[in-house]
Length: 251
Image (cartoon, rainbow, N blue to C red; front, side):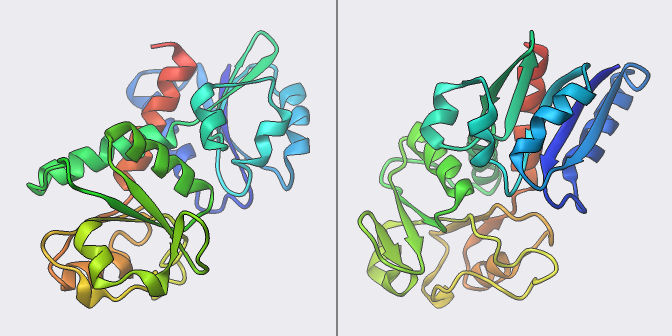
């Protein structure tokens, strides 16, 4: 049976298994395809999964393994190499190939969500990427592909990035797209949010949160309260999953 799976730890709230199991049902593939969760404490256990499941054709990768998994793969797609993170693995002919579809999912969903809300992605816009973890690198790649300049924001200032305290009215006047790539506000700690002055936001701003549980994060709620538009990361999840499926099937 054609087997696919999700690598991560822990996997108590897996989106991918339910998504692909339902997709197989819709496509009439339930008798020939399955999707499993592989809770791996370390990526060195991936070889054991390959040995135990000879019909494994592909995997998704989630936290905390998106960077570490690179070390155990045979080949890397140039975009995944540039990002420095892998969320999709193709298994073919005894070899493993790493890809990143997070950036595609974010890019396509950002464009769609902004268009739905009548917000154009035009020249003159710049973005703030809140957080500097693995997800932030995929967001940066997506913005780069759209021609949108960006600045990273973290707790400490560094070369090429701002601290949260440095996100002033002047910065927000020119950076009108804000993307939360941190886990702040994710279930169950739903009251948390990036430490910016939300009173400085307004109708010119579009705030995108990669978190999808809860559907409206504190970041989104506070942004909307200031008059900004906002969207969560559920659409990104759907888009990146479909991009993974296209890689696995060659479509």
